[in-house]
Amino acid sequence: MQKLKTSRRIKEVIASPIRKFLPLVKKVEQQGVKVIKLNIGDPDILPPKDFIQVLQQIKLTDFYYAPSSGVNKYLLAWIKYFDNFKIKITAENIVPTMGASEAIIFVLQAVCDIDDEVLVFEPFYTNYKALSQTCGVKLAPITLKMEDGYKLPNIKKIEQKISKKTKAIIIINPDNPTGKVWRKDEVATIIKIALKYNLFIIADETYREIIFQGKPICFLRNQRIKNNLIVIDSVSKRFSVPGIRMGVVISYNKEIIKAILKLAMARLAVSTVGQLATAKIITQSKKYIKIIIQEYKVRVEVLNKGLNKIDGIETCRAQGAFYQVVKLPVENSEDFIKFLITKFRYKNKTLLLAPMSDFYITPGLGKNEVRVALVTNIKELKEGMEILKRALAEFKG
Ligand SMILES: Cc1ncc(COP(=O)(O)O)c(C=O)c1O
Image 1: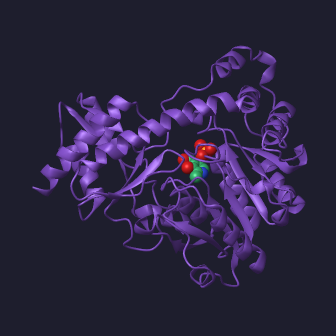
Image 2: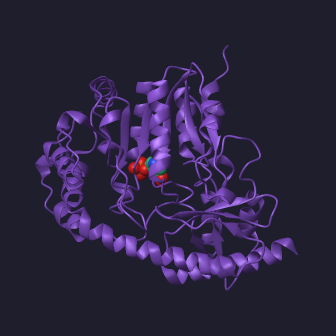
Image 3: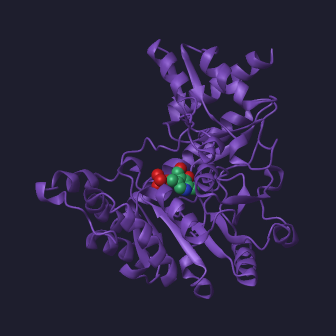
């Protein structure tokens, strides 16, 4: 008889480095240890007040299946949101998704056949790895280096990675995990390459407005790439509501929208309540986003002041989003994180960070790096830096 076993495909899929230590953490928390969690991009900042008001007005009749193409209010909210940036989109350009995560799966499936390739700049948001593995898509990495401020490499280095199987190039702006905000000239280079090789540009703009200087770059503004462009967006981070699980795919390319809509129909719809509840906050983004940017700016300052006091640390200050990569004076950051959880205590507290290896494709890269997510208040962040300093000294000793 045939043995019961899981698929070969799933064996290749990595467990999220952001979440994999949580069972271990739960255990020590049950023993009364306080763990300061700087691993997951789950903002502690409360969402806009209006969000709860709309939720309280939800009626018993609001639990019908929404159309796969979305509830009008939700679509209109995105149209209005982009109008603020002087970008014109219509309902035909949008497909609602369950967060940016589902948007990523849909886009990869719509664009790629099995074994097709997509260019990514490493380090990149690690879940692209698992999601592309489940879609049978290969990620071809272009390495960005911390010591160069994660700047785009020479155009030739990028072109070397393009093969007959390359279908798209992913750009996350502002970037998770590096906190990089892509410069105009870098974006222009990416567009030039995409047009030259006729590649789709998958622009993940989940953190669009969370930047500490200047104005956000919206790929949708660029008319020359109308056919190539697929934008992934989400309310998770900019409105601090990751648990509502709402996002969108936006494209001017009718074939892409048709393809994504087929996938959307197969899984029926996204939450009707989620669409109704987020519609209002999306249209009122300006005021709220100003507030959170101010808060994240202060946190970046506190983080870097704290890091400056620790010997042997290398880092590149975040310009946007709410993450920063830190090179630690250890051989293996994963071992250090395990040490933090299982052994190290300071005033009965410890710290959780995300190891960086799986934010890269190239083996060996990021081994001594961690990602810090600025998702706790200033007091905890300061405590976190104190713990990091003391734990490193003890770990090395
Ligand atoms: C760059 C990027 N894209 C997508 C996602 C997924 O977000 P969502 O909560 O909307 O699924 C994240 C979450 O951290 C992210 O950082």
